[in-house]
Amino acid sequence: MFSIEIVRRKFPKKHPKVAMFDFDGTVSLLRAGWHDVLISFHTEVLLSTPKGQELDEKSLLKLIRGYVETNIGKPPIYQSYSLVEAVNNLGGEPRSVDEYNQIYSQRLTELCEPRREALRKGEANPNKFIVAGLVRMLAMLRSRNIKIYIASGTEEVFIREDVKLLKIDNFFDGGVYGSQPDPAAFSKKIMVDKILNENEIESCELLGIGDGVTEISAVQDVGGFNIGVASDESGKAFVDSWKRRQLITAGADWIIPNYTDTNQLEARLFVI
Image (tube, rainbow, N blue to C red; front, side):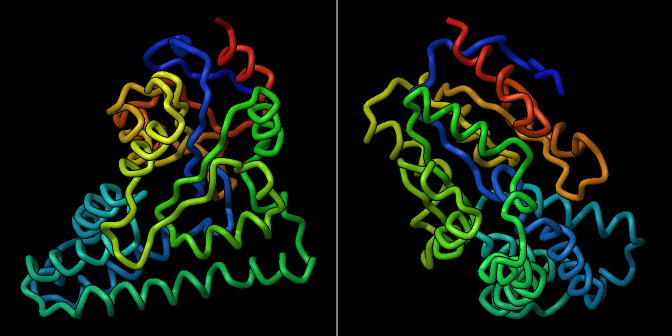
């Protein structure tokens, strides 16, 4: 059991009517390890540049993490835009954004596809690949007539299959949304505006739930209420301390490690 870390205010101003969940790290663990795959790839590329070869490991990692973390929650191609810029800044000759994006996508597929295939064949339990307590949390929100959306920076075509593989697709009556071939067609800000407009709710009636800066900032900017999920995707710790710091800076009102104490979350969310 855990205690909710109250960061900014104790309770929402009003009961939430709509919830917007991020996907990877907030709902799903199918892509757990993506961060290491991305960092490894960018390190490999930047070490091949003239100035990159001169940097020590700590400095190079700091450089990469600086832009990688800024792009979390955005469509993956934004990481490749930043990689091209970093290669140029370090005196190298970058490949195209699309090439870098394709290479990363292939490496991520090599990590995730065996997990997804095991689910397709019924060889793995879906509970292994969702954040602890998630189903109880979703069921509680639906019992309160909360409309639930997913808004993910991962490609929508994959997210739509993933929610079915994880057997949680019936909870997301608001819809499942992800990045599109045109990067400008999707963002967490676009999703927040869409949700507010189509549901005709006050911003304080929007509940944002995520483990990344982008979605937390998008909800915070309009005056919604945020629960930051500092989930440790490696399973080595209870709370990911780096996520926690980033979520607090982005505007999380509460911090939780997972949803295992849904009763406590329900009592605090609906205390009014």
